[in-house]
Image 1 (cartoon, rainbow, N blue to C red):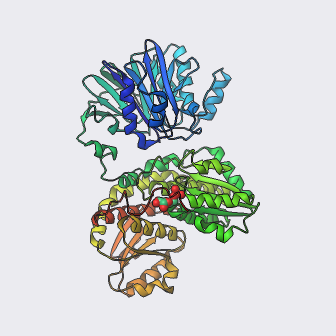
Image 2: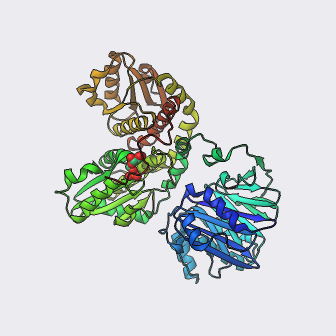
Image 3: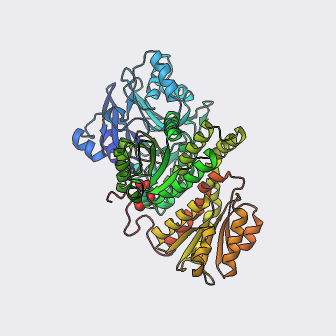
Length: 607
Ligand code: G6P
């Protein structure tokens, strides 16, 4: 996730406006920043790695001439955060500059073809192909907008882009597919941005650009066209009545809620990861004598789910270990045949890094799954995969958890395929269901959020909760419990449902709330038995069930229905979403700040 912004002013200098707007988009990424302006038929570019303030202190981002410009704040996906990989990117002749938020899936093929035709690339980014493609189309005599359209028709993936060119120095051409893009309309200026807060102090009139549309900005006027058939679209600006603070959260009261709602789009990004890194990681896992899945907090819960995925799909045992325990538990036995897959949203958690260091010293192979390119984990891992969820601000991990699950399930599936442990039909079914996951989650959020708010209202004063699940749903129970505890400060216990009768059941008294996670998998029958045990002792049952599961619905005091027909190994992805929303609304009902829970930190860099 990156932030883009640009403007065409009637008068004055664009660069300082771009600089302050990018500051408002910094939450979308902050590992490098750059601006390009057009002035007297020349491009002027300043860019470097580092936070905006650092780059500004070095290069003075306000000091670029011209009233037209584009800017970018980066969250690295393809290519480490170096100056050369910083946007804007240019063509061979340095006449065209492009900023981009999204992922070009077929960039490697396009780059090879362009290189064969003599184009010289400077960066390792996917974005640079767009600049070179437009360069080619322009030499064929098209206008900048037509050239951008032709280039984008060759691109597979997601994008919000903006292009300037010295050949048409009065214009900015922008386009979008699956990445956000909005245009701000003022008396004396036009702006575009990834997000409304970037221009909200300057204008509250905004035009939302839809998928596969191009918008041509030109001195106070704009023209929108559809990329597939070049049809003209008439769209008037709407008035935004958000305050600046509301706008940063896109109208949501908290970042956590915004991030829960972002999950469909984050999951779509996990379906576009670079094949070569997933394959390489699969090779290391395949060859390992033993595999440890090492993490803390929410990432550890993802690892527990992953251990079921590897076992069920690839028939391969992996060991999820809490990072702070790794050295004591396995420090002496880990060896050259061991592989550690460290899962860490931040890539900076001290306990996780300490486990890796111990393993590295004993010649084990270290792999990483993280959300932050350039983090320590990406530097120490032999191979890493970036889950591409974009920055997560809420301390409670939500969107990064479901994205981790998606990537880990893809790894388990690859291993299963490679080892011939899974049938063709199962592979196709899993791949298809992974593709449907964003829509399934969208529907849960749309249709169940209000009900979950009501359930939270009903149970807000309960002093303790149980979360129970069997099999892979145990990981969901753990994550639901963690969310509730960390942001609503309600003590909660998560157990494998079968184990609950060996102790925790003694806590049950009439009205004690027990949340059961009940997908219709092989554990379904026995879970019903566990529900009966709790019900017989007066517990209030809140059940997460698949649509049409009348048997469990009839036993529950409250239930939430989730799409049916999910493969067992993918069920944690949709089943955790109601628990995130429940924890969120419990925090709100109990007057706690879900974004900043007491005593916790987003990234824990001490042991
Ligand atoms: C902290 C955060 C959790 C997070 C954990 C691991 O405890 O509050 O939300 O799950 O660290 O963080 P990591 O960045 O390694 O995934």
